Image 1 (cartoon, one colour):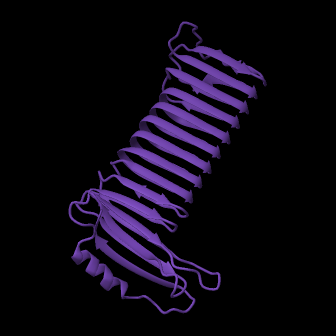
Image 2 (cartoon, rainbow, N blue to C red):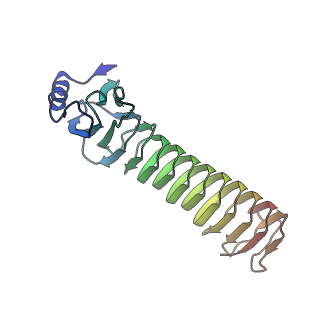
Length: 308
């Protein structure tokens, strides 16, 4: 592990002397910007809270802007910047509370070259990234996570308590939320896994293989083109409107209906089991010898299959 260059460290020290405020209880903030050392090829951010924003650029070099906020002279946050090999690692911590009250944190706004690998771990705060083409790993304990305009990245996003949203292109995408919606909007991916323990899952775009699940919430595929789809919800509806003939669809709803709309022009081998009844539109061509398999099971709900 190595620290920033002496020149960069001196610049940070000088910046820290500006706008520090006094030690009384109140609101204080300070903003400072700097560049990562030459040769930096990756970014890692670990923070207890506040907003993190990372945007991609076609320009070389990594540029960081930090905004420090604190409520009194004894809880001003400490921002750390170290180089771990070729990766710049940013982190922050707060001082002790005064009179049981503390409002302290560091927000980050970072510009990186498009192919830079990015990892962000935030305990309490929103995370937004855009335009990235490298590996992306984002985790929020409490707060929404957004990854937009992806450019072929391998993406892993999770939020313990908050929504997750991804758009663009990704080789593989793993999207998870403990409590909150998971949305892949117009996403193009070879493989997509989306899970919400307590929240809805919504997917549109073009995916090779989609593996989707919710504990309590609905699954909605609106205008999705996919070869293989697996969808399971313990308590919620599954609604699928597919834009291209799938090779394989398997959907299981513990408590809730399943509604499927299929493109015409193809025959499908359809198997259905439903506690609340089942209906397949005569316009959907069934062919038990077809290589395109549809398997739908609803424990306590109806199943309907119709043409798109």
